[in-house]
Amino acid sequence: MSVIQIRFANNPEQTINCPCGTAADSFIDLFNVPPHQIAALRVNNEIQPLNTNLMVNSMLEPVLLDSREGAMIYRRSLAFLLVVAAKKHSLAGELDLGHSLGNSYYYTFSGPEEGRQQKIALIAKELQAIVKEDAPIQFKQISYIEALELFQKNSQRDTQLLLEQRSSSIIKVNECKGCMDLYVEPLVMRAGLLDVFEITPYRDGFLLRFPGIGAKTIEPFVDEPKIFEVYDEYKKWGRIIGVRVVGELNSLVAGMKTADYIRIVETHQARKLSDIAHSIYKMKGTVKMALIAGPSSSGKTTSAKRLAIELMVLGFKPVAISLDSYYVGTERTPKDENGQPDFECLEAIDVPYINEQLAALCRGGEVTIPDFDFKTGTRRAEGSQTVKMDERTILIVEGIHALNEAISRDIEKAAKFKIYVSALTQLNLDEYNRIPTSDNRLLRRIVRDNQFRGKNAAGTIKMWPNVQAGERKHIFPFQNSADIAFNSALDYEIPVLKYFADPLLRAVKPDVYEYAEASRLLSFLENFAPIPPQYVPGNSILREFIGDSEFKY
Picture 1: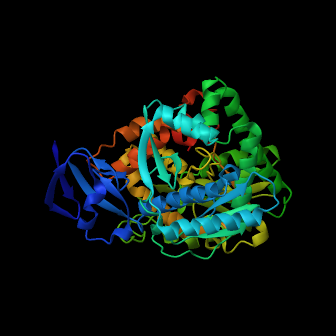
Picture 2 (picture 1 turned 90 degrees about the horizontal axis):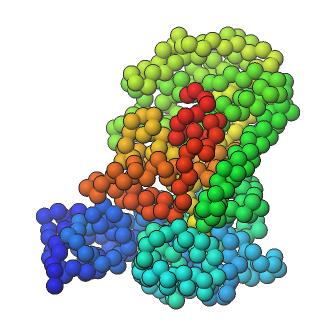
Picture 3 (picture 1 turned 180 degrees about the horizontal axis):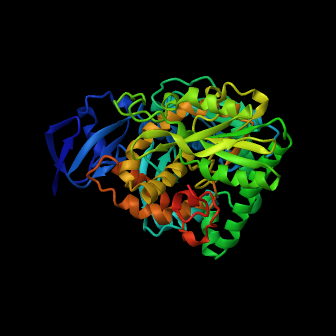
């Protein structure tokens, strides 16, 4: 019997020799952390289920439930148990996974509306019972043929379609109380760890609510009606055109219908931008500026440029102003908790100066927009763009803080039209597994950072948690103040991003901490049939990230 060596991140000097194939959870008591706080293990910088069998020399580190990775494991595990609870009452076939809404997943029923409240109550009661029972959640590997037969028997057509993209003879699954589902990411080992959740009726279905990152309680629900409406509309549109899940998208690619589908998706998005322009036109003479904000890699810049074209068609003279031009500079930027410049915070922008210039423009004055040199970290006040407004001029102000009233406090409310932009992915992987919108944006960011900033994937992954923390603090709280929300996601884009991101992610090796996220994203991308970039139109928002755009940035 071969012997392997186990080391521990919290005590690198300690080593244990054990038989090859020993379960990782055998060492759970050696981490100096209460077992109920551990969601999974980092094994040689790859996050694995606790009951993973160790086959090689390994460095182990616990993934805690209150960490970012632990929070994702918590919510995926809870979503799996919801399906287990629904199957107990033969409701899983009616369950439709919608989208995220804050720290919640939205579900509806495909069956008749009658009895909906009773169904919700049954599922909630059963889920509570499973958690109270502390039912085990097992990670297993089964053959490809067995997996196909299993999902066919369970009428999981979308999962069957997803497996057509895979060529591995072994398929990973999770099992609890006789219910199996496709393994996407690690889950917790026991249901009892998931004792903080709520099931709340909402709209035509219900919300499965869970704690936020680092939280141990359910925070008060904050409704996001504009985001919900965009998601809901795109979900319905996906059903109409027959692309709701990744397997259906892969079938289009396999059927050589990619070009036609891309044209449909791009035309649909162009129509939405046209609708926004017409909404602004209805307030012609009153609205003087369109303010555009959204999280990182949401496509704000290209959305602003394409909106400008739509406004020109209607007779406006758009003038683009980027809040990036008003950075105070590296020396004056506040530091974050790690002592690094916090370019995401409001104080990184010269708020008095942008207010002064916007107010002057609205009074009919002439101003020179400053230039910010990102290489030197300094701003040149003389700038290169002089602006003056007339009756046809409309300002397009774009930046992460554009919806914050502090940026335009001296401008009357009626003169402002606020637009929130985000990549709100409507596609699900299959019946019970959704695609986080943050994964879509992270892939965009990895590709763009490499294409235009010379940064490798590990570098982008390393800074992503700080970017997300900044979004939660500085962007998301203002999204409900928008007059309209625009979805910049394109349902075909992840297969295109795969073309670029796959080699970048493979360059992240197991000897760096960021390997865990790179490995997770590679596993996620395996579900998609690739689409070559030549199909992407030159004016597409996706070109902002993959290059060769018709626009200048």
